[in-house]
Length: 158
Image 1 (tube, rainbow, N blue to C red):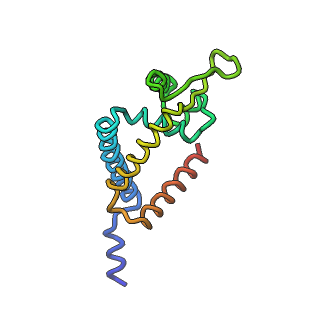
Image 2 (cartoon, helix red, strand yellow):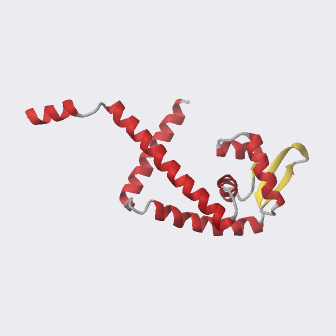
Image 3 (tube, rainbow, N blue to C red):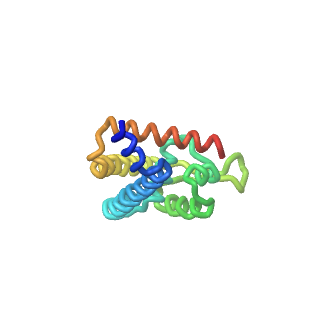
C-alpha cells in the first residue's frame, strides 16, 4: 500500500499529462502534415489546401456554397476563394451561381476533378497508413473515438 501511495505522489498531475498529450498531438500532426504536403507537391504538383478543398467537395456531390466550404475547412472566405479560383482554372472545380444570386456561388468537383481526387485520396490513404503504421488498428480506433468525443463535447460548450 505504501508503494502505491508513493507512486501516486510521484505521478504528475492530470493537467501536466494533458499538456504533454497536447504537445504530442501537435508534434505528430505537424510531422504528418509536413510529409503529406511534400508528397502532394512531389507526386501531384498540388498543395494540401487544394487537396482539402477537393476532399470537402468530394463529400458533397451536390456542391457547397463558398461560405459553407470556408466554414467547413475553418479558413477565411478569401483563402477559399483563391484556392477555388485555381482549381476552376485547372478544370477540377466548377462554380455556378445559386438561383441567379450573383453574390452566392456553389462549387462542385468536375468529372476531371473527381477522378484526380480519387487518385490523390488513394495515395493519401497509403501515406497515412505508412506514417502511422506503428499504431495498431485497435489503438487507432480507440484514439479516434476519444478525439471524436472530445470534439463533440467541446463543440457543445462553444
